[in-house]
Length: 511
Image (cartoon, rainbow, N blue to C red):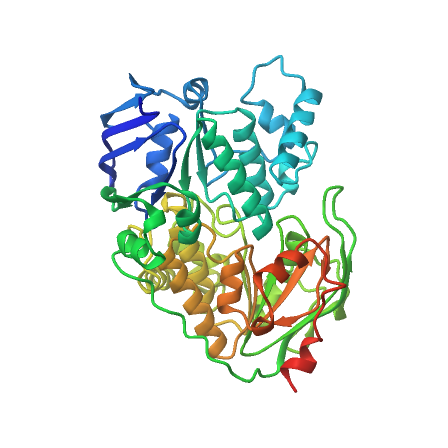
């Protein structure tokens, strides 16, 4: 049988790094092939070469047995290659249907395309509104747009990068069934994920890349999570020590928070109530687009429409405070969008320190202390193992996972009293994920109150003390992690907690 795709000695050099160093890869028709590697290993560059977005310096590529030179993504799509990028390629001011139409013939009817989008989204369990503008979407919803756009093309090769982070456990099972069906029909799938259990469940072949080089291939179904981890990062990630402890005083309280939609496609928040004490982590689960974005804006100070008493920060009414005022009262914040909100792409890592560190240590009499911010950036790079060429490296030059490590590290360096984190390990490799989670738990042990909003249920179960679920702008009851199950939280993510709600957490936790 002729292979669908073959890469022979693919090499790509940049001025400061060799991203791909003689990589070989073979993908069979109907194969589900994982490409595994830590952040910065060269996976994204390799996928962009296959898709024609990056030209290799040397090496050969064969498509269905014939040598090809894919000059651009249009040629890749013509051949039958579709890709969902780690960093999305969407125009904020256009609607979902308009974005998808950009890659299609000019005579495509938008009303017919919108119908196809809705049908495909429903088929794969990816809720989308075709007429919604992209700037109103969360990161998870943008990922859905990219996945649906790829599926509409009915490709011979589908490249998926972290596709399950927007789905409930039940929807993941449905997507896997769909991918297996596509593979059975002859479509080849290149699957990139840092969830090793997913790779073991779904994929039939795995190529491991480390520092831009092939380091091994295997059948992941015959491997353990530990053995895959050792192949990827050379070791097993350290276990996280999550010791029970009595929580302290309430540091963040949200009382009867209700907010109308800020735009037609927003989610209305209705009667949100929770509190977090020092020395505990409250995890909030939910499918992207159910009010997480609106809740984060209300907590961070980007949306100041809440009543003053609806948000209380260390005993101070903060509902009307802006972001800068809340930071002075001990709030730290990690947004879900890395580039554009978490970091300014064109600025250096040192200058990006100023996004959250504006104090006497960084600014004196209106002048920036360059040496001070450079030292802070270097401390984050060293402590969190960020792969970057020093504090002067531009944020846009970092891989997604390394930029995430930097942004989380920057906030932890502030030692906040309250830390609100969205998607702390999205797209981060297993070793870096373990480190970030361990740092969050250490912050909790030091007395910080943490709110972690994540679509990674395994992550929330690993680090949280209590869990709540957000669905359609409403918040479920609180439940101790010890009393929760994946199936229960998955059910709650559909908004079905009224008949399954456990005893209120205070009666359980503080008895």
